[in-house]
Image 1 (tube, rainbow, N blue to C red):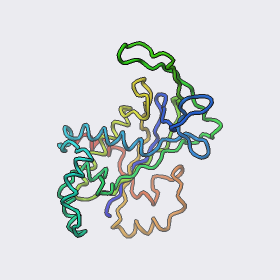
Image 2 (image 1 turned 90 degrees about the horizontal axis):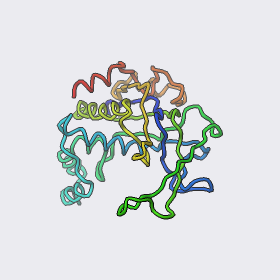
Image 3 (image 1 turned 90 degrees about the vertical axis):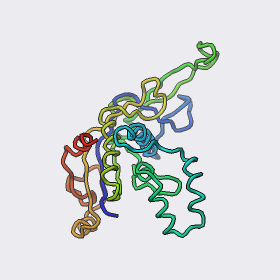
Image 4 (image 1 turned 120 degrees about the horizontal axis):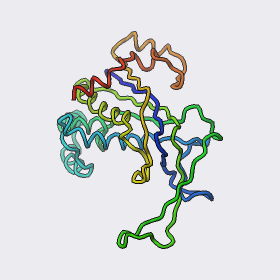
Length: 263
């Protein structure tokens, strides 16, 4: 490890959001996902998937990265080269073969250095967070008319709610410059409200916007910084300040703008 980047901010719903639980209840066919206390949250995997897809789509043009390969195609390519090989040989082959995007987001054979935990709601108590019910009618694709007996409904979380955003990346120095640009693409799209989440996107649902972004850099080769980490208090992402020892040094507010300008 060397540099660990932490990105922190508020993800605000600028429109309704539906991330389904996979089930329904007596009130609706499709409830939103909630934690054990009944509070809605955004799964980190949902944000990560949208984040990766957006970066993969724009990186070939903006950063000059190759177009991403399908996971099946990549596994077919790599498996014969690494089966029954010594670990050192495998690591060398993967280092040579994988693109910067594949190393950043991970593959079957390479663990991703990027983590996005589930995004919890800020402040609200479960009783204060009631969903809304939206209604729809399934369309027959052959006739273009409404299907018979095909009315459905689903729960959404209304606009205005705020979630705590946290993302961390263990930067490889050899890929630092490229990874910074790749992450800047996704973060800027979030700031602009151009990275929708969840289901029913065709209905205009899923609009979110990143606000109050802070960027931190932690140098794991800095002994003094490591000592401050070990001596810091209990973890509390909701109240830690700009000099939080777990995150390291806060970078200038213009960091994201600078990285976008470098594209």
